[in-house]
Image 1 (cartoon, rainbow, N blue to C red):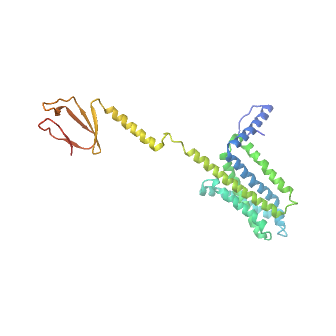
Image 2 (cartoon, one colour):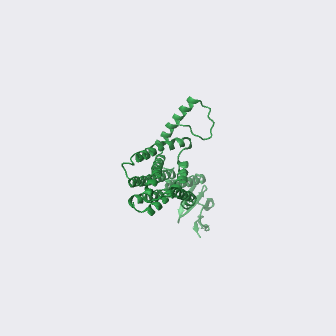
Image 3 (cartoon, helix red, strand yellow):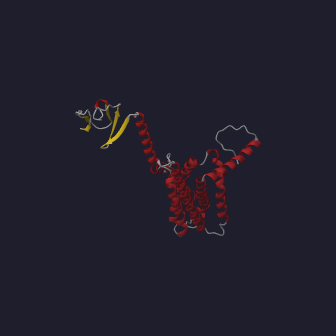
Length: 308
């Protein structure tokens, strides 16, 4: 319910601030209703971080049952070193794939396998320790990657409010799991963590599908012409050519197609000789394409246009 900390100066009083916080909550809920991608992103975050917080409580009893004298400090130091390795590799992963969205789905599946294997193979301490280290590497990759994605898709003015809304199911999952530790065995709890990570992979898959659908919707504009873009362009060119042709026409103009070539003949007022034939002195030929030559007038005064 706190207002967003964006560096803005707020001169509102206490009453106004509380009403503003309520407005932020209602606006955050409206953002979640409008954008399915933010909901899927929040569900992914809730599942992964719930499994991570449960693991914080479960790695100690699980390893203590497999090692007689467990050096807790050294094990925790190994976990932190693995987490640092994962965070340091994010830059190279982004260079290879282009975006954290591309590789987080596979990362969730690797993390799910890393917590499911110790629950299935319960007697190997070395395998359990290696799987836990792999999970910590995945945690190191997760934190900067999910931060990049959330900064791209969650609006800034309601960002903290949206994050806090998804911490509610996160904490409920953790509390329910830890409250039943006496009923569930350690291996069963780790198996539940694997299922949560698999659910995170599923939600991330749906998140990628929603991104692809929204991108295809934005990149496919409706055709401007009612008959389609290509037909519209052809019709526009035809209208343009017709307008140009009309500009050069005169009341005495005639247009003919001769062997695929357009021939325009502008005929002046003609005279008829005594034989009823048109005199050649009034004929004027204008050829738009192709070389032509005019033959000499015959004895009747008639001119002819012949192709060369």
